[in-house]
Amino acid sequence: MQYLAGLKEYLDVNYDSFALDKAASQGTWHVFHLHGRGILPAYIVENHTYETTLKDKNGHRFPVHKTDIKFFHSVEEALEIAEKIKIDRSVRSMGLEPIYSTKGRNFIKNKSLYPLMLDREVLFITLLEGEILRGVIQAFNRYEIQLSLKTGLTVTILRHALYDVRNKKGRSFLKSVQDRKKDWKKSQYYVRAEA
Image 1 (cartoon, one colour):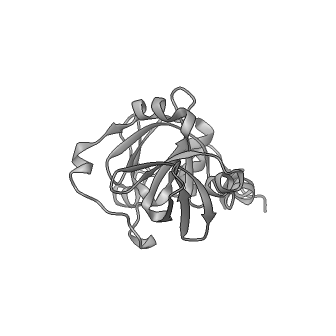
Image 2 (cartoon, rainbow, N blue to C red):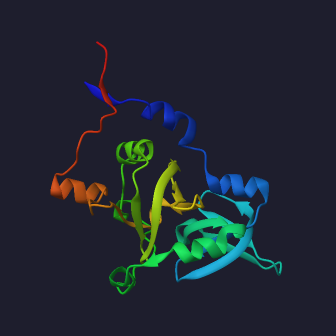
């Protein structure tokens, strides 16, 4: 039997450690990109299992279902990050909504994310409303992928907002695509379990 060396240990430490929780506990300002193409500079005042309450600079509170958040980043890096976001117009024209059912989401396996993170492979992550973010995976957990953009800027993508994840060669790492194309390749990080 073979297993992916280090994945279990990584997940034990990181799988339930969320950037949204960290942002809530620190009270730091972020820019939240919401479905419907809304962009809201705010900080988190309440963070629950399915809903987050954001507060803007005018003191207005916005209860937001977490599936309505596509990604977020620090306020200080907002202008630089905005310049890095590209748009896939064909995806945008589909008018995709948030996917509330976990079974209907575009799923990427932890077994795919972990080697991509270790190899620092450049990825193009397309979101449901067509935004494309290019970078390398810095970290991931149960609900989020932290992506380091070319200049070292960090964006936290909510996994439910994924449309596709591809490398420079155009290979998709979504489970549904790999199951259909049968192009899954065993990572160099797989090792044989001791008997």
